[in-house]
Image (cartoon, helix red, strand yellow):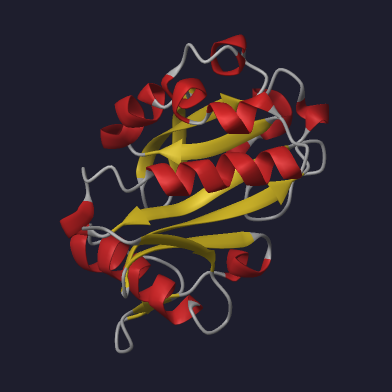
Length: 194
């Protein structure tokens, strides 16, 4: 039986998150990542200080994590230029967050454990009064994000070290979500009801 607990990772938990990232991006996918410490088997990221990092545990085991970084699409931050949100969002004046380093332990993929992480992201965006969630999707993840209500906005992006990626955007004001007709709108109706 699963005992899921979602927390905001603090300095004490960050090494666990960084180890999971290392397992996924460096060991499994063989990406050459900035911030990779191959001796300690950690993948650090300066963006950890820019927003929040959610960590999902099943008992004592970290199974998933995601960075959520509030951004102003009209004044983009260095390091996020590839998103080009100023020119990619219909209403960039209404704010956005970038979801980065969304990883799930290889042995837990497909276990429907991402639901609590998505709920936390949506609740965070609602609390921050931002309209959009942006993520860069590797080709193998485009269909998954689309099933959650993300729309492919640009599929011609190159992002090192991932290669070709698709910018996908979730619009918190999309009628499909607000009415509960999308999967996310149905699954997380309490977030959209507020």
